Length: 279
Image (cartoon, rainbow, N blue to C red):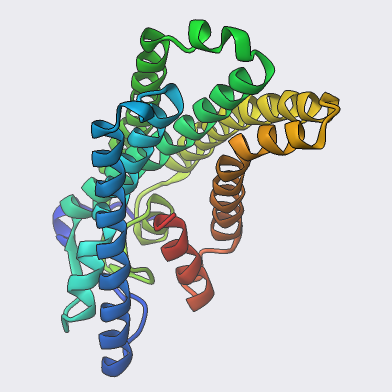
C-alpha cells in the first residue's frame, strides 16, 4: 500500500443512517428520545441505589457501575450522531475519531468484564448462599470493578496507540454514524496487518476470558437450580439471575450479529450497531 501522511486528511465524513432530510429529522427525534430516556433511566438507577440502604449489596453495587457505563457508552457516540443528523456536512476530526474509538473500547471492554463479574456474583449467591456475604466482601467487589475498568482501559490504550500510527489519505468517507476501529482500516493507506492482528488478539482474549467465566458460573447455577426439589425454590432461585441472563443474551447476541456481518455499511448493520450501543 502507498504510504501517506496524517496531515493529508484532517477529518472523516460519516455517511450516517440516511441522506433523506425528512428521514433524518425523524431519526433525530427518535434517537434524541431514546438518548434522553437512557440518561434519565440510568441516573435514576444510580440515585436510587445510592440513597436506598436496602440496595447496598454487591449485586446493586455492580449494577450501579453498569448503569454508569451505559451512560458513558451512550454519550460517546449519540450526541455526535444527533449533530450529524441535522448537519449537511457530517464530519469528525481524525483526533476526535481516535478519541471516540478509545472511549468505545474502554466502555465496551469494561461492560463485558462487569457482566462476567455479575455472573460470578449470581453463582456465589445461588451456589454458596451461606458464604455469600463473606466471599463477596466490599474489598473483593471494589477490586473486581477496578480490575474491569483497568482491563477495558488497557485494551483501549493498546489498540488506539496502534491506530494512531495509521496514515489516512484520499478516501475519507466512512459508511457509519460513528468511528469504529474496524471502519478505519479500509481508509488507511498504510499497512494495517499489525493493527488487525492486535485487534483480533485482544478482542478474542477479552471475549473468551469473560465468556469462560460466564459459562462456568451459569453451568453451576443451572445445576444448583435443577437440584432444588421444590418448584417454588427453583422459581425463586431462577428469578435472582433471570434479568442478568436476559441482558447477557441481548448483549452477546447483538454483538455477534453486528461484528460477524461484513463491514458493508448496510442499513441492517447500522441498526444492529445502534441497538448494541443502547443496551
